[in-house]
Length: 148
Figure 1 (tube, rainbow, N blue to C red):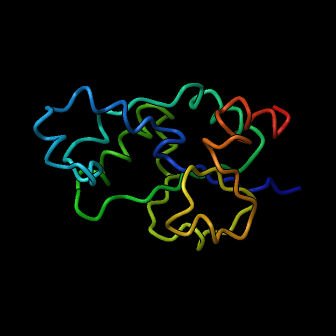
Figure 2: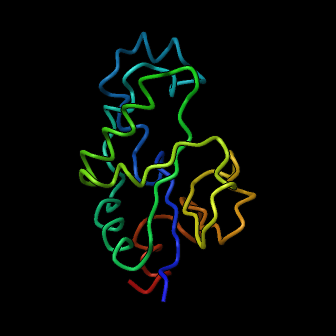
């Protein structure tokens, strides 16, 4: 029997986006009040969300897991930094499961774990687990949902 396909978003699901802020000069942060994703090198400074790495590995034993992420158009380093982040925290071969897209709904699968309802997440044809909400506030709640 084929494994079900599970997509996991990066920012604020696998990756703690705000964890980079202490490593960036305040003046640079102030220059990007509404577009911090466009700060060069910001994605290389981020750390995993609590329990994200362990949860990813558990889910990968049960599902055909892919990582979906929407890279910033105005920050070319964001693309390469996301690949390097996946290699660093999820292993050398995990980057082959990274899909960078502005249209998550074009990917076919059974589940999507995402914190935002943008970039096609809301239109995803499978089941959306809205991470960071009351039902799925953290990785523990996701693992419980999947009986892991």
